[in-house]
Length: 249
Image 1 (cartoon, rainbow, N blue to C red):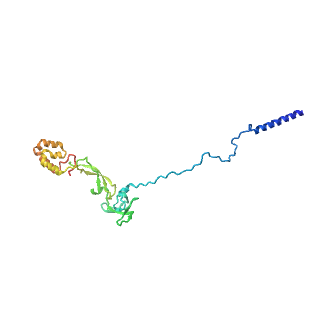
Image 2 (image 1 turned 90 degrees about the horizontal axis):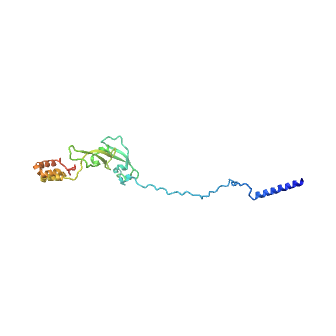
Image 3 (image 1 turned 180 degrees about the horizontal axis):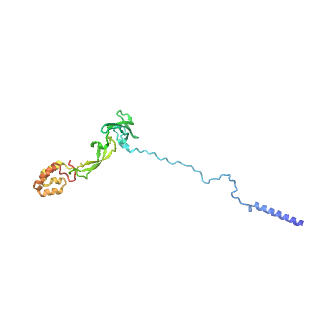
């Protein structure tokens, strides 16, 4: 019995020895891949980078569009209304002289009568709207599609713009009904001279661009003189004019 017990102890010691040897060789140990301390910082494999500021957008150096109408160093009172800002004088009386407080727009340079630089100044003008100005103070569009020689005389819709150096109230561009007043270059004196001398052959009508009437006078010998006399009177008073409807010059 004692012998068997001693043999069992030897077998247990051998088994314990073999198990320790197996563990030390690494084949039987448990694998802890993440057993390293977590307090150790992880290193980023990518290299650090720095922000490089890009080129700053260039500041706008363009001049305002109104500067083209604003001569530098001129009199403030003669500047175009596009160059100044004025306060409306609500107390002005229509048709009476009035004063308006004005100042120049940015980048506009002007002087007073003493050649001293000014920013704020006063403009004297008549209290009236732009469409009430006399015809010499504005420019209107012309029309070549209306008849100037007609009864009653024809009108056309024109767009008028106030001249730069004129100051007034309201819109500086306005519509207006005007009489047809364009010319095609025909002279009244030439037409009358042809009617008196060669009217029997229709020369006056040919000159005015009226070919059918000219041919009628040519082949009828001026309507036996009667048509010739009538045309002299009609051209003389201006009733018969150019075929394109324009005025004589």
